Figure 1 (cartoon, rainbow, N blue to C red):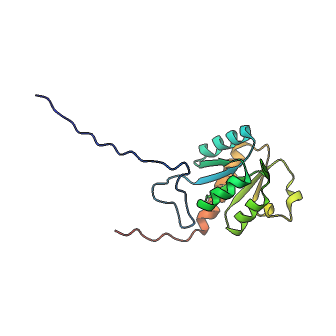
Figure 2 (tube, one colour):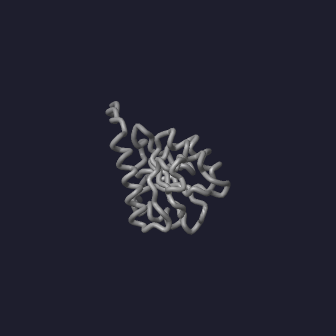
Figure 3 (cartoon, rainbow, N blue to C red):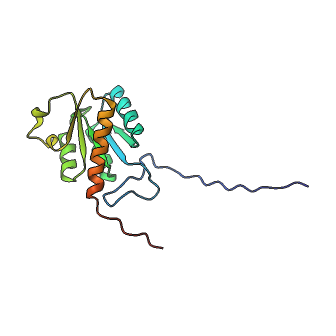
Length: 159
C-alpha cells in the first residue's frame, strides 16, 4: 500500500525594501528595528552594517542623498546613521528632513562636532569615526529606546 502525503508550501514574496516600523509601532510581520545607514565608503558601511545587525537591527545602506530621499519618501526607519558626506555631496537636506520628521539619527563622522554646531547635524547624537563597534551599537540602541519611550501606545488588535 502506498501513502501519499500532501505538502503545502507558502512562499512569501519580499519587497527589496522591507515593510518597516512606523511611528505607531512595528508593522505586522516585522520583528527587528530598522536602521537606515547613509555611508558611501563600502568598507565602513560593511563594518557598521555587521555591527548593527549584531545588535538586532535590520540595516538598509544607501550611498547618496538622492537615494536617501527616495527611500524616505516611502519608508520610516527607527534610527538613521549618517555620514556627513555622501557620493553626491553633503547630506544636510536629508538630515534636515530627519529633524523635521522627528526621526532619531546618529552622525557617524570623522569631523569635529563643533564644526556643525549651527546645522541640522547638531540635532543628532555624535559618534566619531573610527568608533568601537560597541559604542556605535549602544548609541543606536539608545536612540531606539528614546523613540520607543515617546511612541504613542498601540491600539489593541481587532478580533
